[in-house]
Length: 388
Ligand SMILES: Cc1cc2nc3c(=O)[nH]c(=O)nc-3n(C[C@H](O)[C@H](O)[C@H](O)COP(=O)(O)OP(=O)(O)OC[C@H]3O[C@@H](n4cnc5c(N)ncnc54)[C@H](O)[C@@H]3O)c2cc1C
Image (cartoon, rainbow, N blue to C red; front, side):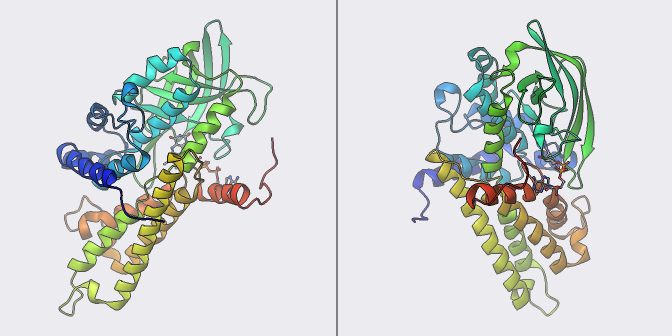
């Protein structure tokens, strides 16, 4: 295998870095640390102007006609600078499902504005009772003429408080169970009957509980056939599990090296002189490299139209948790001071990573669920739960 980076990918990275200098301001990064929204509207509009919200879509559809590697290089440059990228990435999961399965009318109503960075779509799958098993869905949708009437409750609907639409999983056949009798609807979030309550994670991310009470949505906003939401949902879920969620382990590794090269060791040298520190940093750098390579593997397999599986989505967050804890151990209590304190070690970066890491093993499929998928789909082991 040839690991040499293609010249068009290097060019994309340089473009991404130039974009960062112009658009990812210190104020934007601070706002994200403070709010945990995962969204910046000005950033999305600037990306949309270049076709970078949907970078792999053709230019005729508002994309930039890039390949997966170029798109990853650009997104990684923006993420590395602290640009909030949860919004664009998550919106595209719903947009790709609409593009694949929505009616022409719905596509016209939504996709051009998504590509311009004007529309934000959140994901409404998870419910308090069902958790990871989204097919336990109890949120009801009932057809009434040209409309659907929706009642129910979702949890962990990230950035619902800012979104224009929610890609919502509903049960439209009252006696159905599990993955049957479901219908996907994109609900305009300004519809009467929607109530949103904030939920904060220990990583200070903002997510939400959303209540739907007699929410009326035109049939135009149905995605795919009524009662066949499973097909729409499955494509969207696989896209999420296969995505390399751009592991933050490489960012942690860079920060660790920067710290070790500057922090005094109390003997006239720096921490990077200490053999124990060096060994740990080398092991961290190896995991960071593997995370990056698994991300490239995803891009490669998607490029040739295959299904990459959840290796990257599992390995990145797991190593991120492991090494964010190791860094606190290595530096000591001073590493737990957060970014708001001017005395914080390395601007509080290790405290931030330590707090943020755990949730990354839950969203987009928990580590246990992803391991289960690898065991079943790739190793051919028996299913861990009965088929419904
Ligand atoms: C910060 C954050 C943001 C999120 N954003 C969104 C969003 O925008 N939209 C959305 O719809 N959802 C979102 N989620 C939900 C997320 O994707 C998970 O699906 C959900 O959190 C899992 O439900 P639960 O936390 O109730 O855990 P449960 O599913 O109740 O799991 C409890 C434990 O059991 C394990 N477990 C569950 N099922 C299995 C299995 N089959 N095999 C082995 N082990 C299993 C889990 O790994 C976990 O350890 C978000 C979650 C978080 C924390």
